[in-house]
Image 1 (cartoon, rainbow, N blue to C red):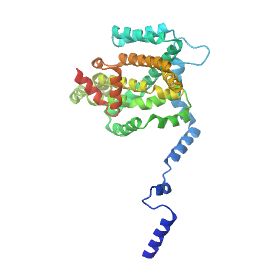
Image 2 (image 1 turned 90 degrees about the horizontal axis):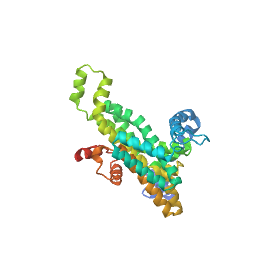
Image 3 (image 1 turned 60 degrees about the horizontal axis):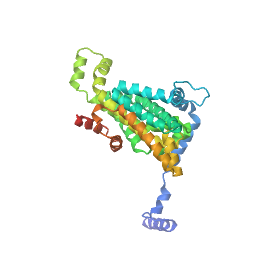
Image 4 (image 1 turned 90 degrees about the vertical axis):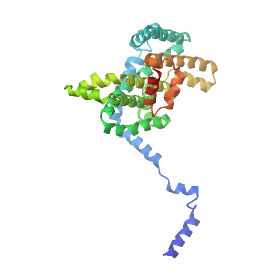
Amino acid sequence: MMLLFLQNVAAATTAGPGFTDNKVLDQWTIPFGEWVEQIVGWIDQNLQTPLEIIEWPFSLLFLTFVRDDAIHQPWWQITDMSWVVVCLAFFVIGSLVRNVKVGGFTALALVVCGLLGVEYWEETALTLGMIIVAVLLCAIIGIPLGILCGRVDGVWSAIRPVLDAMQVVHPFVYMLPIISFFGIGPEPATMVTMVFALPPLVRLTNLGIRQVPEDVVEACRAYGAPEWRVLFDVQLPLASRSIMAGLNQTLLLSISMLGIAAIMGAGGLGLLVFRAVQNLDIGLAASAGLALFIVAVVLDRISQTETSLDKSLLKRIRFAWQHLRTPEVLVASDVGDD
């Protein structure tokens, strides 16, 4: 037996690289990439109906409220509205959501985007529509999911590693399967944006629900309130601050994904910046960057909480990136500012 073992070792040594040689790894490769490629191909060929169902709400919102390539576009699409109407609409929204000062600031800021030129205004309107659709769909999915995670421990235990993966994995990795399934355009770009921007909303909604004092919840139940009253009359109002912080972080992360959305053929101001980088056009980069910064400031001012007004936009975006997996620090920071 010992002689046979020595003969096998000698044969392995002469036949190829030794066990300690890095080249031996090629003989024991794990074809993970090929497995994923086969899975993606199988889904693309056999699950067209579920993929169309997933794409339907994105297409519906874009074709209804953002942009339609048809000749006759409805007046309520943001890319077909007059720049005056868009500025007045954001003035009203800012005044109602925050105050008249914020409403006036957002309107004047958008006027500056229009004064840069017609091309910049059209891309600005498209960018506003893309971000609004992405944040709206994130809210529709993220808030109910966060509430469920906050009320059911088992759901939170199952969802938490998924949220970690959504933010740790680079968007370029899951961008390719989405392009394989849905092609290129604003709808697939919005899907990629949602994968990256959704977790903070789920985490902060879950945090807000769990931070509601237990004695308040128990007192409500002791008086005979059903669970839906406990949720809507107690937990959601007390968790509203944390939920709004989650919406703001989702908005900021959606804005930061505009460059990747441009690569996927979504258009918008990110496309102008991408074009400027390709052509080394400093003037285009400066103008597009200014318009993109204005859009970010406008949406951030409308959605942020009163306690974070003293923080600049760039600082807030950097802070959001630093705490992708621990967004509860953002709420604690706001509390510390009070």
